[in-house]
Image 1 (cartoon, rainbow, N blue to C red):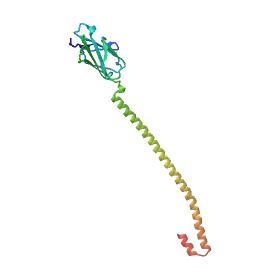
Image 2: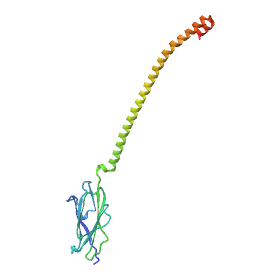
Image 3: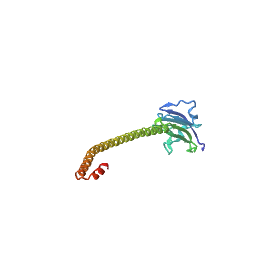
Length: 200
């Protein structure tokens, strides 16, 4: 016989509990699971085949395994600890005479990522960390600028004090030297030079 059997998925269970859905398992085309529902099992069978012992199956979970898995007469499969992502379970069967049906039955499965792996959370954390780093760098820069300004003011004050001290030293010497020069002119009886020097 070249009549090729059609496979239906008869049961879908997460951690050995059937999923709560309004549809029966054979009519479900897609399933959405939370990140902590990443272990599930499926059961499948053929429609309209009376000698079930001679039916053989192949299956694969696209996104997890690329090659078809030959399960012989076994009509169930389990998967555990799957990563978040999109998967598609595909199953096909051969009839009594070994003719495989090229058309497979599929069930799309999406395991959502936890909130801390979602793009918006990661983006938010990057922005938050960037903002905190910017605040820290800005505060460090302000502290450094304040220290430099304080050091500059201190240097200026020291320079002013030193200048005042220098002026305080220069003024008496200058006055003493000037008076001494005028006195010298007077002693030499050079009155005009003495007067000129005094005015100068």
